[in-house]
Length: 504
Image 1 (tube, rainbow, N blue to C red):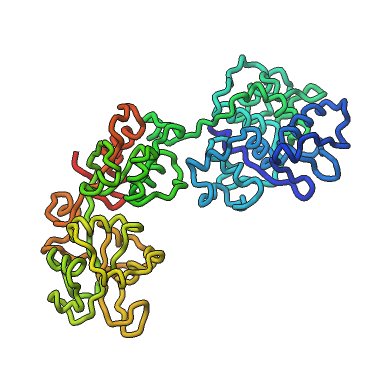
Image 2: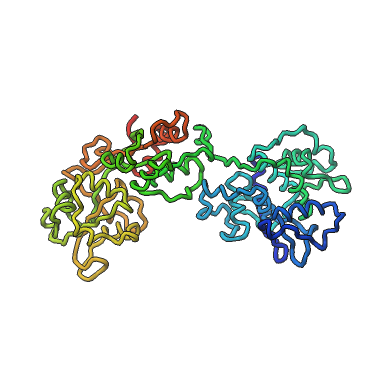
């Protein structure tokens, strides 16, 4: 049935035919002047209206003979499901556009994204959702069949149902299995002339009957969302995916490796993430090594941790600066001592010295500055006055490092070279600064490279660890993820995150 996914997607019918999944209170008790009490679909229309699946087409009309657009069909199914918003827990439904011909804020966009991520639909052709096209009878059968499969309903069949119709052979190959199931489940029936007409547009009346009859065939509505082959191999499902916090550059691609989608969540910094671990809100914490703080931040709880990779606190300046490096003693003087006014005090050029500091609330690297450079001493308060505006740090930080600031120009009113810090490889692939405009400085004569970080010769290297609450069962998904990050596959992810994986 994989090819069948190509053939289903939605559309909107113009003007008065617009359908939306209305709250039951808006449709309950609604009657339609064009639905006779003895019509073959009258009871189905009453059911659909009472459940809030359908509204009319205006003027007290139901429009039973009008075609059902593909977007209408998906939206009604989402309303039938009732919990389609759950997809937002796993998939980024705001920043991803699976179909360029679907506007980001159409009435059917979120139901369609749900159907896409649930594995129920894809386009009629690559990148085409065809939102204005009518849904055919065979497309409706495929959508319902896929949904029944994803929700654990019985999709078994005896076979032969399609052969009872003289035109059964006209059904598309990708739809035949679904049509057989729909016929055996009595969701679809033949036409009055005894034909099936699988490629005929589905009418609103037929759609109402399908969802009325589907109460038993689709009794279960809990969607099992598809995962990547990696997640399937690890035995991790969407419902079981552990609560992960900490380093976004590891947690976010880890989520994508398991779901095949960008993560919709924003990750917390070390301090908040540790508090969440202590509160039982986190199963897996991905953090830089903070041995002096972890016990305190987690309230003394018991936990286990595993070394995943190494990184380093790296100090950067503009490539124009002829200075090549600093010592750990000089760094302490800059950040914890009396401060430095000119690069000439460090054996560098006669340029004003401007150090950029950050706070723990927005930057995990500040922990490493406190631990590895300040060694528990407070930050020089003068640096707080010279800090970048924190809300703009992500945009301005490396831009500031990459330039000089003549008197009266820019946010700094002096002719200075800046000094800043960040994690290893942080200045790579940054679109906001010119290439090669920032350079990393040596510390105690050692350059920060993969080799010096891996062997510990770079003095400001540190470990990146996975932290789990003590006592998690051996088969817990958090343990599986932590173990996977220590495999060759996981090492690729860690390297892409700018980390140096621990050797096995």
